[in-house]
Amino acid sequence: AKRLLGGRSVSDDAERAMVSQLKAECGYQFTSKLEGMFNDMRISRDMQDLYRSYKRNQESQQSGETSGADKPIDIEVDVLTNGYWPSQNVPACTLPSQVQDAIDRYTKFYLDKHTGRKLSWQTSAGAAELKATFGTGPNNYRKHELCVSTYQMCILLLFNEADTLTLGQIRSKTHIPDLELQRHLISLCTPKHRILRKGSRGRGISSDDDIFTYNPEYSSKLKKVRIPLVKESSVTKGGDAASGSTGAASAATSAVDGSVPLPVEEDRRHLVEAAIVRIMKARKALNHNDLIAEVTRQLSVRFNPSPQFVKKRIESLIEREYLERSLEDHRVYNYVA
Image 1 (cartoon, rainbow, N blue to C red):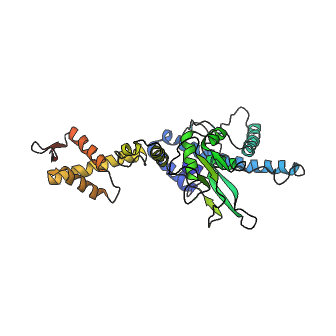
Image 2 (cartoon, rainbow, N blue to C red):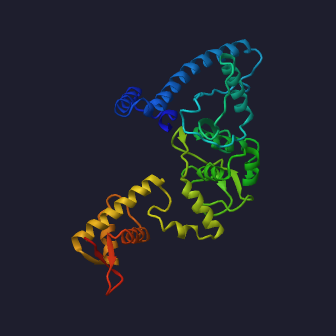
Image 3 (cartoon, rainbow, N blue to C red):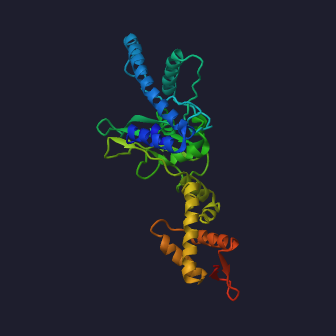
């Protein structure tokens, strides 16, 4: 779904060929939603072409009534069938007025063609291109096109009205969910893309009174700059460090410090357990430190498990009677044939 919506698909033909193979192997029910996704994207492209023609006609009729500054912004919309795509129950944020006007125009155009339907806008998805001017004087102005997420767009456009805003003010104006708001704000304050300056020190955001200031000194060698998002774990770790909590210590007990998806962590559990059994089957008996060192050495080409994570997998194997503790020394493990 992300690949289709982000336009990152290498080839539509390759995607359809893969779906055809899945359909042949697993049956129609397995691929019906995938085929629905492709159909939605095809219809959306056709609808976008119709909307461009409609918009051009509207602009030609109103050419004498609108100035260049009031020219409507361009939007591209993917209309998705609710049952085919992964659902996101995220409340809509408050969009800038010019973006909301463009959405209202598209909604009117779409509903005139499709009566009885309802459009539900997913403001947590999508992207935007902003034309931004940095610098402090006419001779020092630098213009860039910023490729940002919808949430980042909502945040940055607030700084057209004020150079400095607090976290609480940004939240009340945008209604972006708190965790996502902090994540998108931190992404705009990274050393490489410091479009905003953060008042507090450290990676996290300390409170609602934390101040964010527009940075006129931002510069880049690129004309078109993509602003990447930081990982969610960076937000939670930064917030824990700012508040003095022990979240970072508890996160160390997982193999990957919570920075990878659960399915990946599950795969790593199996890899660690397989390595432990393989080593113990060859050695028959081994003490705790040597076993952890050997597991880490064997898996280092793929990832580095933490000692706490390996210890948990050892305990799990003892419970399932793959290993047992030595009666003479409880730090020595024996392989159970």
